[in-house]
Every structure is written in C-alpha cells, then in structure tokens.
Image (cartoon, rainbow, N blue to C red):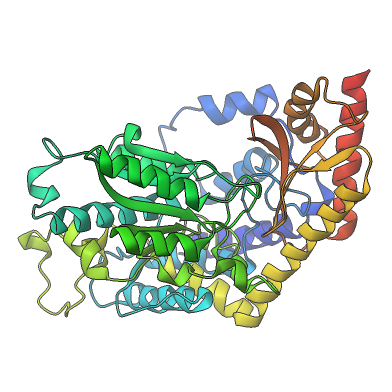
Length: 471
C-alpha cells in the first residue's frame, strides 16, 4: 500500500499539471515514429514493473500525445474537456470497482439519483427507474430502439424475443437525413435492416421536413410495411439543428409510432438563454438518448437513456438466471434488466461529482457560454468576405465554409483539405462534414475556457492554410 500511496500522489500531480498546462502545448501533435512504434509494438513484460516505472512511461509516452479535446481551441467533433470533479473521483470509482448491474450499494443508488437529475434538467418526465447510464449514446440508442421494436411487436400480438423478425412485415424507422449514424447502426444490430431506415429530407435549416415524413409514412403503409418508430434529433452533429420535435411527436401519436429523440449532444441546449422554444415537444419522447460525457464534460465513457415507460425496456431485455436472482431487488429489479450490459461500471460517481460541482446554475452557465461563443463566431463568419455561414446557429455548433475569392471553383477541394492542415499546425483543431452535397467546416464549442480571442485564432489559422493551398 505504501507504493500505491506514493504513486497515487505522483499521479495526482501529473494529472493536475496536465490539465493546467493545456494552453502551453499544441492542441494536437502527430506521434513521432519512435513513440508510435513503442505504443503499438511493445511486448508484455515477463516480470512486473513498478508503479513508478508505469507513471514514467505515461509521462513521456502518453501525455505528450493527447487527442486534443482538453485544449480551449479544440473545436472538432463533439468531444469536451474532462470536468475536474469527474477526474477527481474517477480513481475512487475504480477503487470501489463494483458492478452496477444491481444490488443495494452506493453505485446503484447513486445512478438512480443522477438519472433523475438529468431528466429534470431537460424537462423529461421521470418515473422511478425510468432510465439508466450507458457507455454512450450509441448504446442508449440500441436500448431505445429495442424497446420500440418490442413495443410494436407486442401491439401486433407477437414477441420478437421469442419469434424473431422472420416472416413479419418489415419494421420501418424514420430518421432525418442529418440524423446520427448510431441510429442506422442500432437498426442493423437489432436485425431491422438498413433498407428499412428511411432518411427523411430536411428543410432549409437542416431540420427534418415533417411534410416529407408524412408522405413517406403514407407510402409505406400503402405498401403493407410496418412503420414503428420515428427518431428525431435534438442537436445534429453537422449543424446543431433541432428538429421540430412537437410536430414530429404529433405525427408519431397519430400513427402509433414510438417517438425517440437523439439528444446525445444537444439535449442540454435547452438550458441556453432563449432556447426553450426550439425544444418544444422533447418531453413527449418515449425514449431519449443523451451523453453526459459531451456537453457536461463527464469523463468518458458515460451516456444515458431516459424512458417514459421503463417496463417496455425491461420487456425487451430482462433475463435473470438463477444465480443472479435477488429477492430484495424490489419492483424495479436490476439495471441489467433494462439493457444489454450485465457487468456495468460505476459511471454514476463521475456524473454525480460533475453535476454537483457545477450545480444547476453552473451547468446552465456552461451551456449558455458555449452557445454564445457559437453565435459570436457565426457573427464573425457573416462579417467576413472570405467565409460563408451554411446554417443557422441553434446550439453550439457552427457550420460554414471558406471561400477566399468569393467564387465556387475548387471550394470543395479547398474545404476538404482545411481541417487536416489546421490540425497539423497545432494552434487550433476543427473538423469537416458534408452539407447539401458540398464540403463544409464545422466548429463545436464545449470548453468553458474558450474565449472570443480563440475564435479569432481559428479564423486566422483557416486563412493561413487556405492561402498556402492557393500558393
């Protein structure tokens, strides 16, 4: 224990120095060949190494080559810096090392509390046991869609768990063209088939077109198919758009469809000043996915699925072998009965620490700060002659492109190459996407330490690499 105590103190200093020094280093650094070879090719040692030796390798071989998402000028994908409180308690969760499948211990009881907190934050109706933490929104989506599939089969008089899908009319799901890929992946994993995932066109604001949704539904019903679910987005990854949730909920109710909302990134955007109207209808969802490890900054991994009626998910997943029977579990049972995971890590401690440290006001301030940064950046784009804003700013994502001479020639090639060139320079980090058939840049703001000055650096970096490309 003395070796652990000494090494833990050193690890704490190393952690604090790393987090405090993010601005002193490049946002991202390519891994040199020698270090890459060591990281990939090292052999398992024949004899054990000391904790001090392990820390020395982490200090010299791991920490110098981060993904970059801890830096205030990291604007790529939807990856936040880790919350200090979440980092603080992560070793304690590991020290306890429980399985949060079920039972009466702190990990399980705390998970009930933080799931309720998340539901309350975004205004989602929450009953006892109506949600659980997951590895991320991908797994949360699998749980939501599995519940939807079981619900539809039960309504039609059969049990998909017992009978499978063979011989039944295809179950059809409707997602926006801008919907996240995890929706299609979940449909594939559940045996629904990508062919029956309908990509609904979007409007000029990159939101699901409700008229197109109604037309597609009518065609599929006439063809003898079985529409069962519509999945809307509360914050797409391309533009941060929020679908017209209330209207989509109306369509779902009219047709008896399960209404799933992908709020992995954007559900917390409802807390930004003046944003609530854009999220009207989110509380009507049957299932909702969100990621505490995104906007909240809970250290990965941590997603969450919220359920209007948890009994449906339990019907889709519960399987309790004799050796796991717990006569004291109560009406709710175990978390393991509501999803695919049996052994489940103590994710709730990181969520609890992060949310408790910030408080509701602090969470709202974090969301509002980053949304304001996005609006400021969009204003800078619109004021510049060499940039073009591609979508309205709803959350904290800005979609735009660089057009140095104002023309169209070569714009796709230029904008496709900009992200990698900016990343290589190390002063900022952004990523690209495709919108309306063309190449686009996107900047996502999640870091509470990001300033307006950092936004100017990003634009300067893009201009620099665009000029180099022109030469």
